[in-house]
Length: 232
Ligand SMILES: O=C[C@H](O)[C@H](O)[C@H](O)COP(=O)(O)O
Image (cartoon, rainbow, N blue to C red; front, side, top):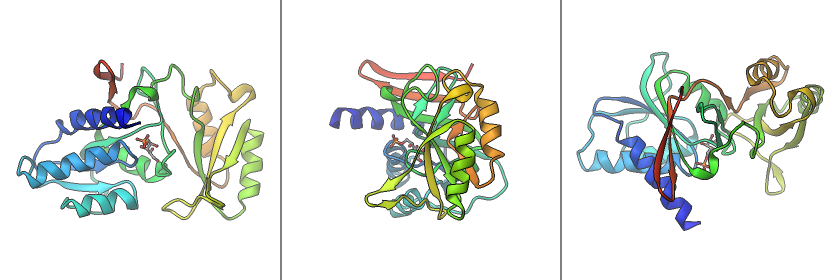
């Protein structure tokens, strides 16, 4: 475990090398993005980076960044320079599943506005096809959730509402997360862009953890070094 943590940190440090003084940055969420925020904090404290402004993708990342002296503000409509975030699955085209940390909605809101979205991860996140290892997190409204789940089941989704101990997990936005796998025509090999459209068109669905065509590259740390996976 400690070894994987070292790899995650190594990937994060590589990505933070892309940050320059004066940039407006998107801060990701999760155990790997945390290392990137810590490295940004370290560089700001050491005077290696100046005049950064940041927007965070979760309450946790916002609090961490502020505790390290980073300037964090709200998401405004202007595009920004660089977002650094983790992922749960990464394909060779840098398509992603995100959201096992529960932050998928704010991550997507922030990261669609980034000129560059750079992913940081360890090698266990690499897959050939999305859905190989991870479920697809789908954020759903609490109101009428069983009706929403029924609509999702009709699209071929099977899964569970995420738990946090004995309670249902609640996102920063006050919603639930359905961790879905897909059977039937929407299963392995499905047209993921079409699946995304179907899911987004489902009443009660707020957002999905499919991040297709958004990331520019991923820094993926493996025992033999950090590999860069670049979108083709
Ligand atoms: O909602 C959480 C995010 O999408 C995370 O970036 C993702 O789950 C990866 O997290 P970790 O780096 O902890 O594996």
